[in-house]
Length: 252
Image (cartoon, rainbow, N blue to C red; front, side):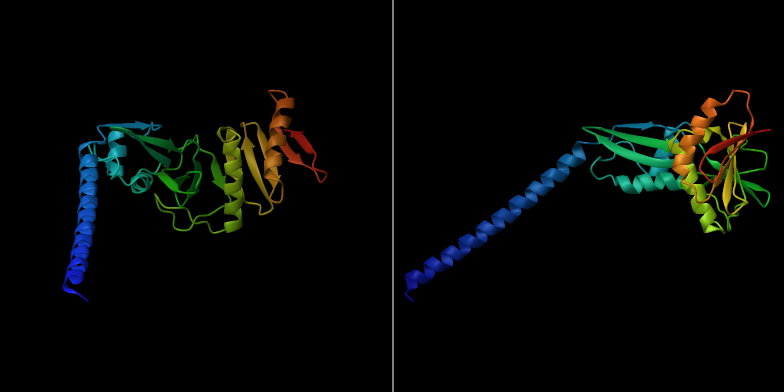
């Protein structure tokens, strides 16, 4: 190989190295510029907390770890939302949204219809997911439906309830979710699961509604609403279904 040819190859190699280094430096410079822009702009100058009546905005922010003026894009929304639900028991769910260029919105969903379970001289309140959200004295929490016939294992505030009877617990969870979805939960005063084959609701403080554990609960609740509409406003008694699936009203 001649001398000029070797020089040309060496020169091309150097040029290639310089080009790669130039592209690398340009990429790093762009990244630094982006990070700098994110640091200078897109700050959470305004933070809006909605959906909560039990907790103040300061309590929500303190639980989340979010600070005013923090960068919107460096915020870990999942971590902040988890911290809120862990530290504020009555919060069922959290949604955090960025509103560019300088605002953050924290949307809270609170537990509106907790269940009550009395055990060992303590009244425990549970949300729809089975998390224990409050610890009261018997006689408090009178507006909450009282669950009987089911026992919890070592209940602790802020933790998911652990039932001794999983089948009864699953039935309670299924029924309560259906009642909430149909806007009927606020009309229930108690739920009795003492009998393993049935669950009895005190409904509208006028009716004892007997449901079998093998019933189609969704269908039965729709049927219940229709039955109550046909009854007189002063009627009180028991509503249950016979073997043919027909509802029977037995007046007191």
